[in-house]
Amino acid sequence: MTRQSCAYERRPLNTSSLPWRRQPGQQILWIGCSDSGCNEPENLGASRDEVFEYRNLGNILVDDLSWNTTLRYAIASLKIRDIVICGHYGCEIVKSTPNTGLSGPWSSILDRLRSTYHSTLDGVSEKEQNRTLVELNVLEQKRAMSRVPEIAEAVEQSDLKIHSVVHDAAARSGYQLIEPDR
Ligand SMILES: [Zn+2]
Image (cartoon, rainbow, N blue to C red):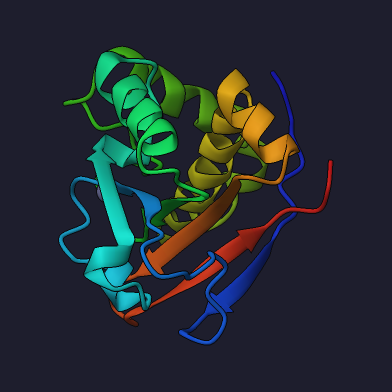
């Protein structure tokens, strides 16, 4: 079974420390979870007209027509320069106990995540497991996105940045997740 290091920093977000670029007319692509139950971009300081939003179950990037079309449109038409992948604590999709309502790539991606990080998750409370899984999933999705050729090329040319974020609805706050360079 694969073991993987999961060292990363949680950097508190506030309106004076937003990681994405803010320019008039420039939108960010916001990838959120369908069951978050709140407006994370607004809670974290993004105005409505700044955000082009895409949501699915667990903010998981599945190689399907919906996601591929969204990505192509965001880059080619909207000239997006920042992508935010935002998970949220209290998620019913991304959690330590498998959700039996999930199938296909969603369940296999989450099963793989639990398996990969089992040594990190073992021995802590269920609440802490769930919060950690939400964070690890965001980081995992960022890695997956970075492997998409058109995104990798844009990042390489400094035209595009991908940001890993978690939202805490109870605190109406969030964190940017920063990994050391690999
Ligand atoms: Zn969720």
